[in-house]
Amino acid sequence: MAESSVPGSDSLESLLKNIFLFLLLLQAGLCGLLLLALPWWQVALIGTVSLLITSAIFIGLYSKIFTIFQRIGTQLDALQHQDFSILAKPVFHAGIVAEFQQQFNTLRESLQIHKSHYNQQLFVLYQMIDHLNTPILVFDHKQRLNYANSAFAQLFGRPWQTLRHSKPELLGLTMKSEWQFSDAIRQQEWQIRTSRFVDQGQENQLLIFINIKSALRNQELEAWQKLIRVLSHEIRNSLTPVAALAQSLQQKVTQPREKEALSVIEERCQHLRDFVARYAQFQQPIHIEHKQVSVQSLIEKTQGLFPHQHLATGGQDIYLQTDPVLLQQVLINLLKNAEEAGSPPETVELTTQLICEHAQDYCEITILDQGQGITNEDNLFVPFYTTKSQGQGIGLNLCRHIVEQLGGHLSLSNRTDRVGACAQVRLPIGTKT
Image (cartoon, rainbow, N blue to C red; front, side, top):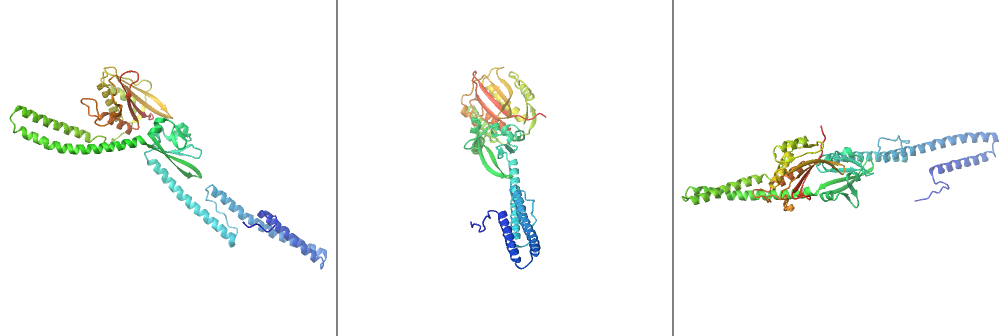
């Protein structure tokens, strides 16, 4: 950078002062020369008038120059705060200063257009977040919850507005090398992806929660559905000619033993047809109708179907925003499994309790039995797998599918206090109307 050739001109103010002093000295020198030719009083009058004229010109110029910089400074401050409404009135209408102010105003307009486009993109971003069914959170530059979509309630059990401005720790989140849940079980179930964006001049963090288990289960479900479709097609194609041939042969044979054998073949063909028809509908999409449900009332209705068991709700009544028909079907299937596992009368217990984990409220429904317990926990939810002689291996898988569609979680395990099994259905709490 070139240095100024005028001594003491480190700033514009000092440069202008030096120029003014130089003009005064020059004027004093001229007055000294005039004393040689004119009377002193004429020289004094000329000096005074010229001094006043010089001062007025200099002050006007000084004021005009600093007005330019003050207006530009005001605009720069406004631009720094993303305020594009201030437009400085030009001091000059021609020349390099006017051109500079015009370029500055062009820059302001360009930034304003860019900000408008960015706001539109940000609006679209938030609209997309609202319509996604995976939980998405936005933390501001102070790492406080600033925004989330409706799927937040599925993960944290309440609307995000009730936890606005909360720190990540209150939500059970920690930030080390990357975002993760402090709870080990949730950490295994959820993957958190992050991104950053700027809003109102501040950097925000976008957290997207991906249910790993759900994704893997969907792939597993899709594989089972493909397998079932193939098996159904092949079995039907094989059963149709076998059944037709058995019927035809029954009309031709005369021996009772042969007729009985053909009748058994035809009967088993029909049984396989029914079997395939049931599994052809395996894991079809479930239509859910959310309603305000009293858990105590739902259990009282279920009690009538199991008169030999004791179903107790215990404590306060809990209200859920869920589908009562589907939830009751889950309870019926689980209670039926408990009885079929060999649990004697009056030994199957159903209890409910209100629990809170990581600022989330849940209704936990527990079913305890005193049957033979679970012999192979790894195959609990595998379709077609069953330890019952008359079982079909679809009940538990269907129960889990329904509970997850209701936004909850189903777990089964052996009891630790005695022989038997424990089934737990955990569902997010709704609000009482």
